[in-house]
Picture 1 (tube, rainbow, N blue to C red):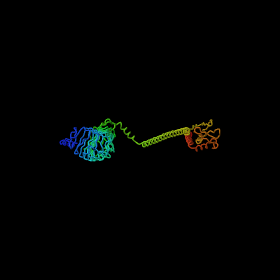
Picture 2: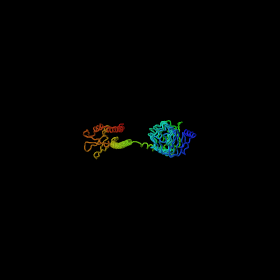
Picture 3: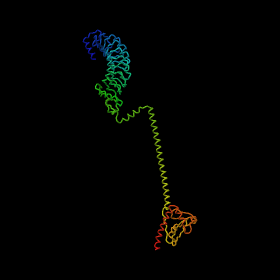
Picture 4: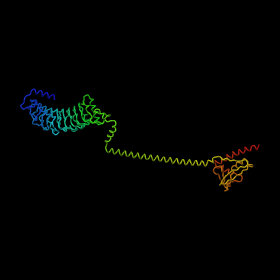
Length: 473
């Protein structure tokens, strides 16, 4: 622009009055025309190199007014009311390198594929502050020389992979998209703008932006993202990390990074996008909630599978628990039964021991020197056995100790002090008067009890011998 103004100032020096130059024109010469508040495009000489018609009421641009200006390099129609541009309006401006159409009423339908295709040397194009609702890449299919494109102050709402897909803007260095209504920014929005050095997205309505949209712009040295509607959640943490790294590079500039204010944030302590970190993107008491929300984003098939697995595990656990309880009860009943059997067996053994205890005691026989009565009972009857002492020898006393009373049945004998009755047939054993050899022989053959009686007999015999020793002396 400085070169344009310098050229205009130089042309003023050589100003030549033209009879057709309106009174509102500041400059009217063979090289330059500068006028204000015109309603139509002024006819100028073929040698005109710069024309500036601003702050007027021009509504349309067509070939009729510009067909003879093949030498024009600068054309400014800013601050007018232009709504229409014919497809061949700039057909003869083959050397034009600056075109200013900002602050008009141009819509997206007013521009077509051929509008700028006649301008192979166009380097600067200003379309800011119009009524453009979208950008069509076909407008720039022949704009390989374009270096600056200004689209600020329009009604653009989204940028995606199709925005500049068909454009030939590999040489574009400056792109101004500020003061629009952009709410969405796709990761491939600037895929074809590999030579971009300056990008301005300030004063839009962006709540988030993928860092990939900027990462492949390796030549970009200036970025402006201030005054958007940033929603500072954990989703924006990657962008914050990218911008922090971007600012650390020596040849990178992030304009007004501190003015990237958070309009909303899960953590009230976070005020700007650059403050977002993994630790503070949400408050401490909301970390679990964020994890649950992330896990809720699963497919219905996976949810059904997880539910089926949970039901199967619950069923298996219930069956296992039931079997464990049944086993414990079974073992408890078995232990109680074993304890009862053991107690019954112990009680029976105690009763058996109580019945057999008298048989294990050594029977004591009390024999007097003269006559000794041995009480015995059988069948409720009691009899006395008189054993004379005068005519018995010590060896006969042993037999007399086992003298038994014969019962009424005539065939059994009873020892009342020996525990269980030891019985037998007196006639069958050959027992006669005063002879107890057969019964004694039977008792000795019976086992443990006769042995005790035999020991008692030997004891009594020893005592008898002791009593007879003094009589022999």
